[in-house]
Image (cartoon, rainbow, N blue to C red; front, top):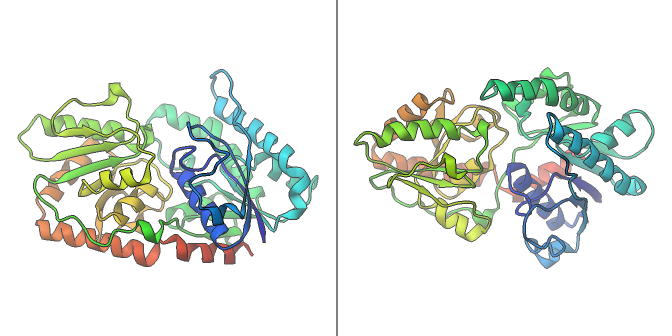
Length: 379
């Protein structure tokens, strides 16, 4: 079996939840001895030609094709414009190999040009599947500017690509509901959640102690609710409330709060160091306005943290009252109330939630099991 995996980057050459998903997707297809032509690009200081984050055995089945993402001056819609150019560059690389593939898996806008060509009958190939993570442009926007970007720039091409593709991947939950509302029939939707590796799963939790340690894990992005976290933290640090808050991710300096209760660890690409830092905390806070299937929640749960997150995207598939808290909205008031509520809970109860989090990942969200579902879905 030969698959073309066309992505907007793989972790850690490009940071992000979609990129982490692409990395594991490629890795576990290779582990199943499936030949993968990986179309991707690099935005890090790593040497992408080495693919050093895969084993030698995995690399036997991975053929790396690097196609740089175009750059241009910034203007309204520049990302969409460059994404279309990138999809055309990808098409020019892949067009002569199309008959070789049993399946073509496209992330985001990377398959735009190819899907249009196939839809017009100008090329012939096997099924093309598209994945748009969480269809965030159809979820709630954090502000009016983002809402306009969603409506005026992203919604039309994303809907068009989804309707023209042979298959559409969904994490399930509210993501599937969004896809159906676009007019995509059930027969075209493949539901598969994301996961982590069994080797990354913690065996035990770190017992919770006072003060309870909270964590935000991820890059600074408006829809992630960092502004609301900051507003909540400014309120909490102005009182005698006892807590500690950690940030892991590239938070801009002007978005940092200088206070002894708040600790910034910066962006961490090394897996071992990242695990160590995550395990410092007790509770992940994820107050996003929109999401797909957050890898940060998976990683936190797998490392023995309980989680408080807004019930958006496919978050509800991961979280319930047995392993965390589902927040109603992405507001500073909701974050403040949630942090206070968690701090009033018996520490033994928090430890039980942590252990349940590990067990849920172990039974439902390991790549070793998910890859078999994926192969069955695309065969």
